[in-house]
Length: 152
Image 1 (cartoon, rainbow, N blue to C red):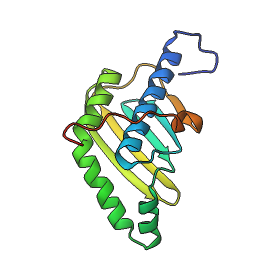
Image 2: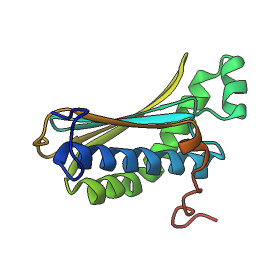
Image 3: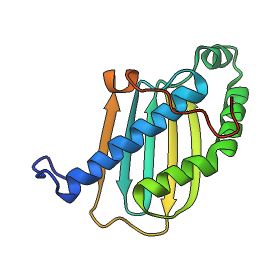
Image 4: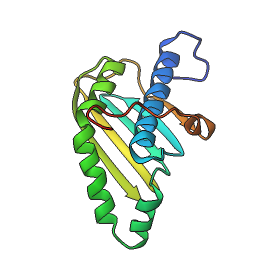
C-alpha cells in the first residue's frame, strides 16, 4: 500500500510516478484529439484494474449539444472515438505498465463532466492500492500528443 512516507525509489513512489505519467498521456490524447483536454486527471491502480478519471473535458460544442439535450450524440461520438483509438490506447497502457490489458472501456458522463477509462489486466498488482493525480497547471502545460497514425 502506498503511503506519504515512501522513500525515493521505493515501489509506492515508483507506482505513483507511473500513474502520473499515465494520467498525463491520457490527458494529452484527449487534448490532441478534441482540441481541449481535461482540467484534471487521476489514475488509480488496484488489484487487476486501472481506472483513469478525467474531469471537465467536454468541448464547447459537446457542452452545447448537451444543453440541447443531445447527450446521446455526444456519447455516440465519444464511443466511436474509443472504438477507433482502442488499440493505440491499450498498447500505450500495456507498454507503460508491462501488463496485458484484457479489456478496456471508456464512458463519458455529463453532470458533472467526467470521463472514465477502465482497464482490466491479466494479473493483479503486487503492491496494493495506489493513486496519482495531475491537475491545473500540469494539465494546461501539456504538449499535444502527436497525431494518431493515419490522422492529419
